[in-house]
Length: 238
Image (cartoon, rainbow, N blue to C red; front, side, top):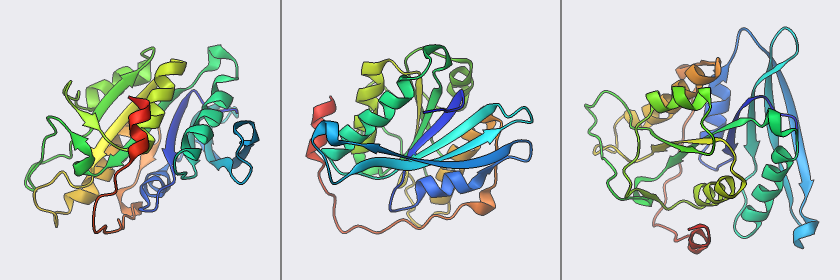
């Protein structure tokens, strides 16, 4: 799978986080190309699903890939692990010298963030974004470390896609940087800073990739849930 040296990787979600970020990121300097992928999962004994998604590439005037944005379809366990493993193997399967740095943003419900997670008030100036670096540190990661907050050692994020992704990049030793924001980190649930949490992640990504972020293009309509749904599969990934 051909990707740029800097690749943003997201999962398509029902609440529209991946769409909000990808639509708000753009560039007046690069040419944008759209692509898609569909990978068989029959090797895992899965015949009714394929690992699929869309890819946005940003190319410079010399047609060199500068930034890619991968948006993978949503899958439930255990198909999730098989599909993600297949996609990451396709990324690893290329030239090791051209291994991209993966930037993986997540917006997680505060109820799924355990440990010394900070809850911000609506009058505080910035959304809180944690940064987690995995694998060999790159120049892009060094920039991101300065723009995000180091999570406390006790922090546990109980979200299936994150746990699965973290497990695989650790095993594969892929240079990866997670950006973690929270949807309910503000004490005032009606605060417009729920929207700002997304914008903070978008602005950090833009400043680290050479893209531009437009807050006006962010559309965020999260679904209301009546109760928490336990994700028993997350224990598989430690």
